[in-house]
Structure formats: C-alpha cells, structure tokens
Image (cartoon, rainbow, N blue to C red; front, side, top):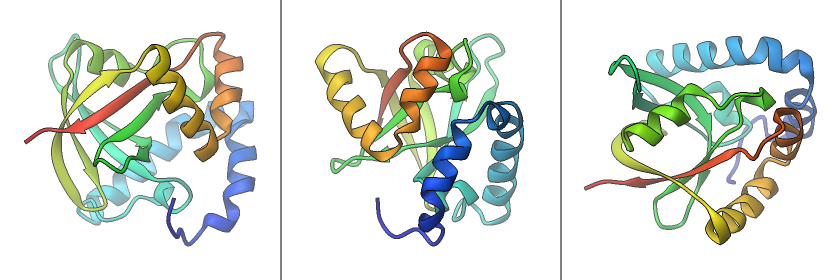
Length: 162
C-alpha cells in the first residue's frame, strides 16, 4: 500500500471507522474535508490518502445528469485499474455514486494529481470473491460494513479509458 505518513494510525482509524458514531459523523465530514483539500492542492493531496489510498470519482447523476463527486478509498491494481467498494459506512442503502456508475459506467477519477477517464464495472461471482479477499486485506473494516448493512457491498473495478 506504499508509505503513508499517518500509516501508523491505521489500526486506530480502522477501529474508529467501524464505530456507529463515525458512520453518523464521518460520512458528512470526511468527504467534505477531502474534497476541500483536493481542490486546494489541485488533486495532489487528500487527507484520507494518508491512511488508505483514496481517489476522487466523478460520476453522472442517475436522475439529474449532473456531475457527482465522491472521494473513495481504493485499491490500486498492477494493471492500472482500481478497486472500489460501495460501503456507505455500513448503511442499509448503497451509496448514490454506485447507482450512478451502474447507470452510466463512464466516469472520471483523480488519483495523486492525475485525472483521467475510467469505466466502472460491477464485479460478480469469482471475480468479485478474488477482489473482495484483497480488499479485506487492505481494509478489514469492510466486513463490519457488510454486517451492519445487511447486504453484500458492491465492488467495482475502474479501468482507465484511452
């Protein structure tokens, strides 16, 4: 996962991220903070990226047709793709960005100062199971989110487009 200055806080952040209090407060505050810093640094920095790799995904709103921006934890892959999880911090419903990506798979993402077009694809079956195992190694809290939500979390692969 690379060197992260605040990586030593990772166990604490994982514990915190699994709490109900964080689900109530963090879902509103952390993305706002990430997006503000992202804008100020022209995409080069995200506070969450100091603990877990984080990207900013821009999808097309499934009802509005307007751009929708969401900072998301991710797992970069060797082939240049990225895995993302629609955890919604364990809430009962899937996050809006995941529905947007299902309706319109073409999106853009920003990662470490680079912005590029991607195509999102929902993973299923064995492909999802393989990706899920790697995601749990990177961020074990996803299991807690699955339990809290009462359903399987959506797992997407973002593949760069030419």
